[in-house]
Image (cartoon, rainbow, N blue to C red; front, top):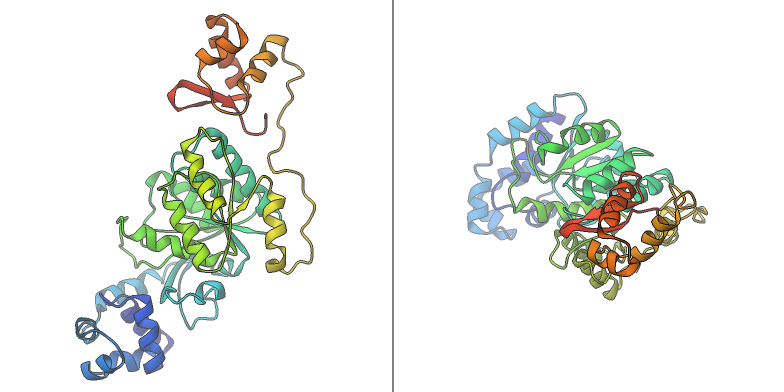
Length: 372
C-alpha cells in the first residue's frame, strides 16, 4: 500500500457521516489500521461497538470527499496530518476526541510550538482590544505561539498582536479552503506565512454554527493554557475555557469593571478557579514549568505606557482624573468636573484623537489602554 492510499483510507474514515473522533479511535484500537476497518463487514463492526447505521455507512465511505481532500493537499503549503503522522501535535493527540485528521495551511511544524490560546468577545471594548493585542505581542516575544479562532474582536486582536512579534495559529470553523469572516482574509494569509491555519473540517466546509464549538476544543487542545481577556457570561469563549479545564489545561482570565457586562464571564472563570491575570508575567510564571525553561524571564507589565499626561493643561488632567477607570457618560463628567458641556465635548474629542481616551457603546468614554 502506498502512502497516498493509506492517507486516503484515513480520510475515508475521518469523514464518514456518523463516525465521530471517539468512535473512530475506538474502532481503530480494534482493527489496527483504517484499511482493515473499512474492509470489515457489518457484523465485525457491530461487534467492535459501531452502531448499525454507522456500520452501514462505513461500508460505503465518502470517496468524493476523500479525493477532494487529496487534490487540495497538492497545493503548496497544504498538509494533511493523520493521528499516525509524527507531525500531529502531541498535546492534541492526548484528547479522547482528537480529530482523526487535521488540514493545515502554512508551516505544519508550528503546531509543535508551545502555545497559549487567547479568546474573548467578538465585540470587545476598545480597551480590551488594545490589551489583547499588547498581551499577544508580549507573550509571542517571550516564545509562545498565540492560538485563536480567527473570529472578529478578541481573536483578531490576538492574532494581529502575535504576528508583530512571533507566530500565530488560527483554528478554523470552516474547511481549509475557506476564510470566515471574509474580512480576515488578509489576516489569514499573514498567519499562514507566519504560522499555520488548521482545521479538522474537509475542503468545501462552510461556516455552520455547529462547527464552532467543535473548533473550540481544538483551540484549547493545542495549547498549554487559555487566556480569556473579555467575555460575557454566555460567550462562546467560555466554552473554550471549559474545554481547557476538562483537558487539564491552565485557564487565565483578565478581570474588568464590575459595571462592564463583558467582564462577567472572566469574573465567573476566576470564581471557578481560573488564575487572575494583570500582566504577561502572571501567565509566564504559571506556564514556566510546562515550557521547561527553568524560570520565567523578568518582564515589565504588558500594558506599556504610550505617553504621559504631563504635557496636558490642568483642565485636561482634571478631566482624565474625573474619568477614573470605568467608561463614563459625558453628563457624569460634567457633574464631576463642573466644566461646561461644550468644553467637555471638545476636550473628549481632542483626547480621543491624541489616544488618551477611547469611545465606548452608549456614548461613554474611558481611558485608553496603557494610559491608565
